[in-house]
Length: 178
Image (cartoon, rainbow, N blue to C red; front, side, top):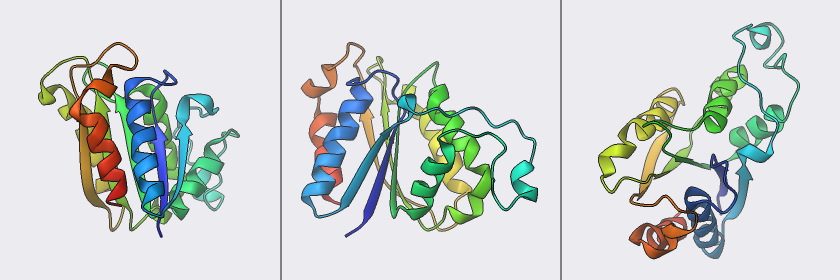
């Protein structure tokens, strides 16, 4: 059994990337894993201020919000799923804030299996490449990180449209394979 942490960056509850997170979670649970999904937009997480208070205070951040709890869950997880809709060919601000704030204890986030979920209105997978580069850039900084799968939710804009695409089934199957 693995501890799976899904970070749903979508600001739309029940949005397309959020739905794929739910399908991934369903598959991962059915495979016997412990799964938690965090809707980042529902947490109070400010941006990194580059003050480096964390460096001089044992990884404690000067910003007092929900990030300490989220970061501990990232450290404790075996699997991290990063999910975001494509915003101007990149990840959304909510998930970017989480990634940046891991700096407080970034050396403790290690040996993780990573899965990536990106959704976009364009039909072309190429529209997700910068988003995936952001995810991969973070994983490059994680010692022992391993990319295990990518789900491309392309050609969807309206909330819920993802259920009519192959990505919907793939999210469930990928979760089952954890």
